[in-house]
Image (cartoon, rainbow over all chains, first blue to last red; front, side):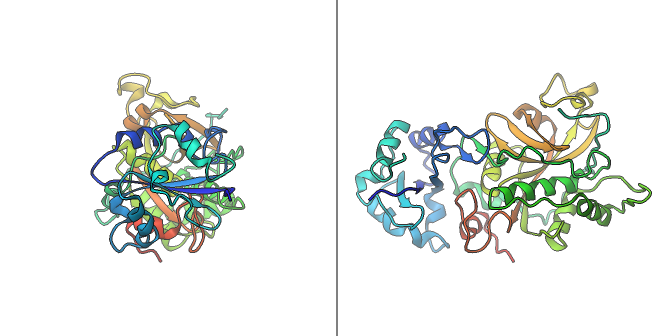
Length: 119
Length: 250
C-alpha cells in the first residue's frame, strides 16, 4: 500500500557534515512553502513534507527523541531518511537499504516511488 | 508598483537588551542547513499597507503582515484591521490619531514585548528571540522554521522609488545606511534573494542589500503558526520547534 502523502525525516550526524546530503537537500526539489517560488514538481508541491535534523537534536531525552529511536537504530548509520505516512505517521521504509540517502534527486524519486504514487 | 510619494518609515534605532533570547544559542548547532527555497507568502496579492502609507507605524504593520502570512498558511487568513494596528501603535508610541501628534515611530524590541504581553489585534506571540543578521544561514533557517522574520533596515535615500532593493554603490551619500531612515519589515520568503512586505507589496531584496542595511532581526513563535496538537505549515509541531528553540512557552 502506497501513501498519498509522505513525511520524510532526514537526519545527518552532528559535527560531521555530509557533502552528499547537503547537495541533495539543497536541490530546489526540497523547496518549502506555498508561494510562487516553489517549483511545481517539488516534493512540497506534490503534497509531501520533510524535516531535517542532526543526530544531536534527536538524541537524549528530548521531546522528539523517542519518536525516531527505533528507525535510527534500524538504519545503523547516518545520514539516513525515515519515510513515514504523513497522515498516519506509520514508518514505511523499514529496510535499512531504503533508509540510506540516495545520491541525487532522481534516486530520491525512485526511492519514494516505492512508498507513494506521487513521488 | 509602490507609490513612494507618501510612504512612511517609523523604526526607531535598535535597542539591544542583553536579556533578549538569542536564537543562535538554541538553534544552530542542532539543525542542518535550511531549505534552498522557502516561500510563505502564499500568493497573497493584497497585503494592505496597514496605515504605513500615511503614518510611521511600520513596526506594527510588519507584525500585522506576519499574522496574515501565518494564518493564510495555516487555515483562514486573518487580517488585522488598520484601526487595531493604529491602536497598538498609539499605545506604544503615544501617537494621537486625532491630531497626528507623536507620529515618531516605534522600537522593534518594545513592539515584540507588547505583542507578547498585550497583543496586537487580538493576537499574541508565545516567545521571541533575536537572530544574528550577519549569519545568512541563521536568517534563512529562521524564516523556514518560524514562518517569517521581523527585521529592521536602515534604508538609504537611494532606495526611494525602488521596488527592488539592491546595493547601488559605495555606502556613502545617498547609499549611506539610514540616510532615508529606519524601517521595520517582515521577510516572508527567500531563494537567492529575500522577499519582504513593505507598504502593502512583496518586493525582493538582495543578500548584498540585506548585509549592508539590516540592523536587527527577530523570530516570533506564534500560536497562529503552530498550536499545541497541530502541526505548523512547515511540518514541525510545537514540541519540535520547542525542541529546536529550547524554550518553554506559555
